[in-house]
Length: 432
Image (cartoon, rainbow, N blue to C red):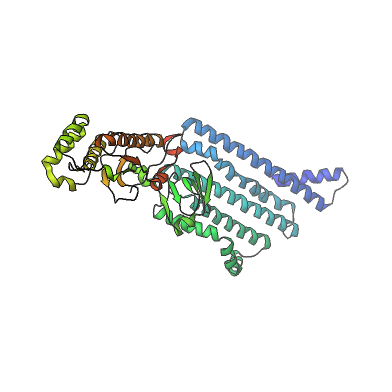
């Protein structure tokens, strides 16, 4: 056997230098030799496993194999070879009742337990990555589950290692651990709350990686980059990073703009403040005169005369919304018809131009519609085109206006989402 040959060689070597008969010296040299053998064999096996994996991946070209190589899963699992070889060889150099052998074996078993934990965590990471890439099509925040799995593995490994090192039953250790449960819950409070919050967010589909969220009471207003057991990482649109505990998202409210991204439409809500002194009644001659310059006026007047008042109550896409009694009503009808004819305005969302309650500044005329894009630059171009056209054409209807953009809404819609549309993209604006 290898062990007998090693012992004989070591004994002959010690006799040649006059140290024969020193059992302790012989044992120490034997331990050092088998440590070197175990380490060398472990290194060789890892190289063999790596070479074999690379060969198979080159032949098959599977994503599974490439992921194994990238994460070094098999080579991490191969760390168990060294302590196993050492445990197999070390008893041959000692008496079975040797206290030194018992200590060496205990220490080696502790090392083996941590090597097994290291390999299991490598397997968990590989399985999580594969599932997250292939099956997690909704980008659910599952990293917290991986962290819990890792924590359980290391918890079990630690208990086993302590039990082996001190020759105690794991059951006894777990029983004693109950006395420290309160302290442990205090220490791991954030992890426990984060785990529960992660389950709630996944179960209720509250948050995905890549969502644009706004967390009230914090500086968080950007895209979710990562969700772990204790932290939600959010990159704001000024490229700063904000970290928020997961339980903050479920214990308080936060706004998720994913619905607008899924719709592919972004809200436009603008207000023109009309000088009430310029609002006046008009006759058919005014309608005919404006119809020559703006075909939409003639189209609107024709629809209104055919349908009568019933058309005023219609909802849905591009309702006839206006009157021919006043210049403001005609302008309102014109803008509704003009917007419904724009290719960049959606036809399956609300579209209306309405007069709101007068204010000390004037009479607000609100434009409410949806652009058919979520790209920030394109959306801003559409927003500007609508505002410019409305302001430029108002004077032809005899109205004096100035822009009163709803800043509270506009500020919510501003931002850049590099994930959704390259460098100059932004998540969709609000639904309603």
